[in-house]
Amino acid sequence: MKSPLKGKIVQSGIIYTALSFVTGGCNLIFQRILISALDGDSGEYGAFKTTAVFVTLLGLPLTMATQAVIHHIAHYQGTGNEARLNGLLAGCRSFLLKFTIVVSLLGVALIQPLSSYFDIPRASLTVSALISLLIALWSGYAGALAQGLGWFKRLALIGIGGVAAKLIFTLLITRRYPVAETGVIAVSIGALATAAVFFWWRDLFKAGERIAPWNRDFFRYMAVAGAAVMAQWCFMDGSTLVVGKYFAKADQDSYGVAITIAIGLHMAVGPLLSVLFAARSSERSSQSMEAPLRLLALYAAGLAVGAFVLFFVRDLCVLFMVKRASPETSAMIGRLAITMIFVGLIQALGMWSLASNWMKSTVLYGLLGATYWAVLLGVASQATPTLPHTVTPGANAGEFTIRFQPNSRIGAPNYRILHQSGKSSGFTEVTNISGTQHTFQAATNQLAGPHQFKVVPALPPKTLLTIMPVAAAAGFVVMLAVWIVTLRRSRVVKQE
Image 1 (spheres, helix red, strand yellow):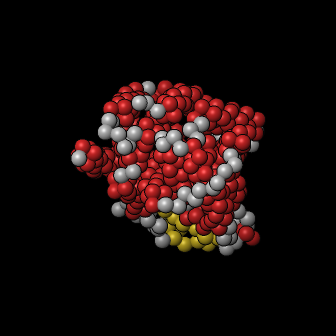
Image 2 (cartoon, one colour; image 1 turned 60 degrees about the vertical axis):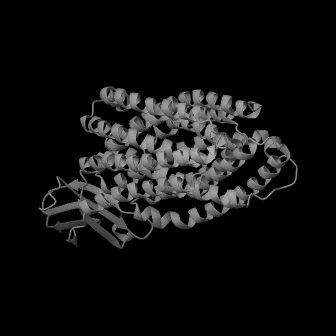
Image 3 (tube, one colour; image 1 turned 45 degrees about the horizontal axis):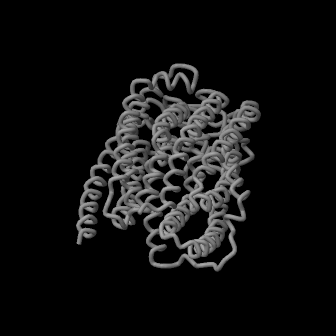
């Protein structure tokens, strides 16, 4: 007999998928307005993208815990034991509250050294990232409680309201102050909308006996959820931090636009993953896998068709986003579309493994994601070694002469002069130049020293964009092979 609760969750998930299309479209409009506000090739849009992804990196521990709690609660929703479910909700709510506090304190402690490593260009951007992180963490806490109860419709509507808030802020503030900081704050304003979940506080905080979630299943969920969340971030967002650290400013902007368009492909079909996760999680004890397999096939078909269409309309997409032709951005989209197919398929198989509680397959998913990101970082680092150089003060305050010998073996088309003043910010690119002797104006006042400089070749975008689809395809082959073997074994066990 079909469970009414399962049917309600699936129906809610379908509505969530439909409304998420609207939210995704609004997010693209937000990005378009932001690109226009942050002015073309200034490097500000690239800095915004890097900072936004940096914030998500710091928030990964809470995302991991949230996914574990959602999975744990979803399992008990299928049992129909409402008393135990309410007690478990109270226990998980207490756990998430404490965990959010811990992650917030960790974020405050780690944000400065990590922002320096990833070359977040300004101290003000680091402060904006910290504000955005704290808002994202506590909004994530609210969203986790709602997802655990299957409130997909409410979350979708709240998401639309959040996008509207971002649009209004961008139109009123970011256009007036066209810097990356206002873009980061706009994202935070949108995230604040999730706090509307607390309007239904009576449903969230029902009285009853608190049941601690600590058991063997929960720790397994924590392990597999951690691996899955890490993999998803590495595959989808990790490359943006690599670009922010190694690309020239103009290339950072081009890549920011290209990856936004490419990820739009996942925004179109991605909500099916949430439905797939819920369907597979609630039916994992059943021998029938027909419904989840159909959802998986539909998702794969959507990815393939979407990437095919995107490849041929990429010039129009670029024209829509930046209001002018950009051959550099269009060229990036072609390779990113191929990458997104393999990344999306790996993600689907990984989510299936997570919903099925396949420990080894999900851990492999996490390892593949970490390996993918490590390969990109390694390739970029090897291609952009720091060059020996000398620095002498110029005739005027804040002016320096940089001399270095270009590395003929690398053959880079241009070089980046990176500058850091004091200990409170990362390195900032001063300019893109070529030759063997250069004079430039430092980004900060001479008195704010000590001044540090780096001379590195700018990473050609083609270098990274060539390795991305190859690495993603290799990861997909490994994940698919393991998924097929595990699926066959699970069917044999159920039949026995």
